[in-house]
Length: 253
Image (cartoon, rainbow, N blue to C red; front, side):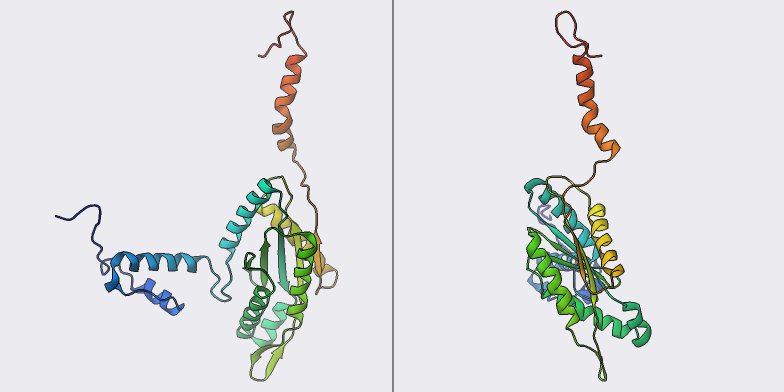
């Protein structure tokens, strides 16, 4: 009789060939099935989870992982008051690279820029490919002066690249960088934070590209609905106290 606490796994019945081939192509080392079905299956699950969070071209975090990190950082900032910076970076005139030299050249440019950005930040920072030729960097516990320094370092480092896209062709390029610090002590949203950083990125583009624009705004506006939720109950209490009875007890409906 099989012990229900330790069920037997039939690896052949699970049809893991495609998952194993995908991980091996990515360079993931898998244990031998003979070492145990449990460890083997767990390594495949872990490997697939890791792949689902990574951009296949650049090896950076993908958009899904980026948004999860950003939402988590918002919570940390709201609780601790520590400063955090979001940078959005866009390769200038990237479409011209694809149109003039082909998408393979464009892919090599994206890979080179990804490596360059990763070399400019700290281990605790998250670099992601946000989409197309746009990258995002989440920098927790980041003071204003340091964030500005890193953003400028990234801009200068990318501009200094000499990217080989074919045996006879090297390319130089520039980037525009926009950034926004998270509002402290207030719970913002990922979309609002991204929008503020994107606004600065568009400003950098509009001002001639190849530059850095950062929003230091630390206070976000409060909507009418939020004001109603915040102050509506207080108004009700004040109204009740304004209708004191003879026994000086407020009459609540």
